[in-house]
Length: 310
Ligand code: NAD
Ligand code: MLT
Image 1 (tube, rainbow, N blue to C red):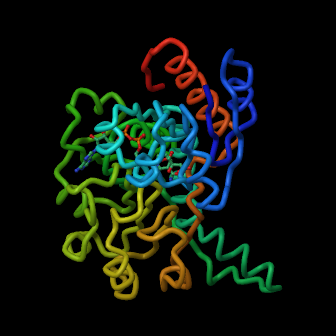
Image 2: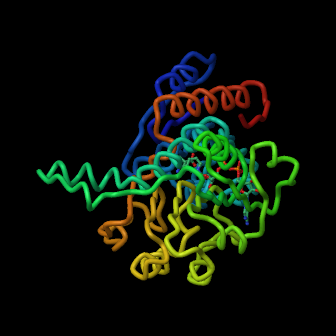
C-alpha cells in the first residue's frame, strides 16, 4: 500500500508510516498541483494538514484512495460528502492540538491587553513609548467564551487561573458540564452585553458564520476586546473594522481570517489589531501529537480496518 504525505508532517509521524509493514511512504509536502494530481492517483492513503485541498476533482482521480487523514482538527479543506459517497474514510486528530491552541488564545488576549506586539515593534524602531502603550488588567474582568468544547474549556481553565469571571455560550453543552470549569452559561446576547473580552472557539458552520456580525457589535460593551483563534469567517471582518474605528471594539487579536493569507486586509494595518498567521496549533508538542496520532490511526485502518479519531 502507498501513503502520500502532501503537507509537512512531524518526523515522528513519518517514522510510524515508514516502520509499518507493507506501507510505502511518499513524503512530498508542497508538490506543484499538477504533480500532486498525478501522484495521488496511485495511493491508498493521503495525509494532509491545511494546505492540501481535497476537492471533488482530487477524489475523482484518486481511484485507489481509502483514507484521508488530517493531522489537526479542521476538515474545511476536505470535501467530506464526496469522500463518503466514494467510501473513503476521513479522519482527523481533534485532541492533539487542544492545549496548544488554548494557550495561543490566552497569549493573544494578554498580548492585546498589554499592547505587547505594538510595544515590541516600537522599541525595535528605537522608540521608548511608555505612555502610548498603557494596557489593562485581565484580573476581575469578564471573559465570554463562545464554544465550550475541547479548546473553549481549556481556555476557561486558564482564565480561572488569571482570576477572570467566565461566561460561556454553547447551545450544545449542559450547564452541569461547564459549571465545574467555573463557567456561567448564558445566552449569546447576555455574553455580548457583559463581556470585557470575547474569545471564539466554535467550528465554522452555517450557524456560526458571522456569529460576530454588525448587529452583534451593537450589543457589545464599549471597549470590548475580541480574540479569534478558531476559524476565519466567524467574524464579519468588514463589520469588525467599523467597530474598531468607532471604538466599540478596543482591540482584536486574530489568528484566523476569512481569506488566508489575508492579503490586503485593512485589519493588518490597524494599531489595535494583533495578528498571527494561523499559528494556533503551531508548537513542537502539538505538531508531534497530531502527526503521531494520524499516523497510528491511518496505519491501523489500512492494516486492520479499525477506525478511530484521537
Ligand atoms: P470542539 O468540537 O471540541 O468544540 C467546538 C464547540 O463549539 C462545541 O462544544 C460545540 O457545541 C460548539 N458550537 C457548535 N456550534 C455552536 C454555536 N452555533 N454556538 C456556540 N457554540 C457552538 O472543537 P475544538 O477542538 O475546541 O476547536 C474549536 C475550533 O478551533 C474549531 O473551529 C477548530 O477548527 C479550531 N482550531 C483552530 C486552530 C488554530 O490553529 N487556530 C487549532 C485547532 C483548532
Ligand atoms: C486545525 O484545525 O487543526 C488548525 O487550524 C491547525 C492547522 O490548520 O494547522
